[in-house]
Length: 150
Image (cartoon, rainbow, N blue to C red):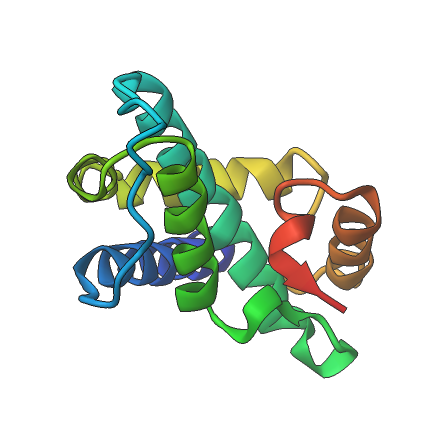
């Protein structure tokens, strides 16, 4: 049960960072006129949901393994969210499209998906293998590992 609460909290943290990135007034480069507006909002929504899940897992690893030198790349969920916005903008999505996808992220489903992700690896909160698993994620270059720094 603790794992469930902790990961749902990490998912909420990831979602909050994603939502805050959506609200920032700092300019994110707009798609250049040479790039047509990407209208594949189904893919955008899937990418956004996956990013939220991956960030929740990475934040969980970082919370549990900070004393072992494992942190979020860029230092915070905010930095990861800003990088995500930049990638989606570069893929041709408009800021309103990204904001709409962000607003529709289901934090409950994200938390549950993050729990399933870790449980699928045979991990649970307090497991001595958590930090080793985080290091493996980084060394293998997984989506979660790309959000971590060692």
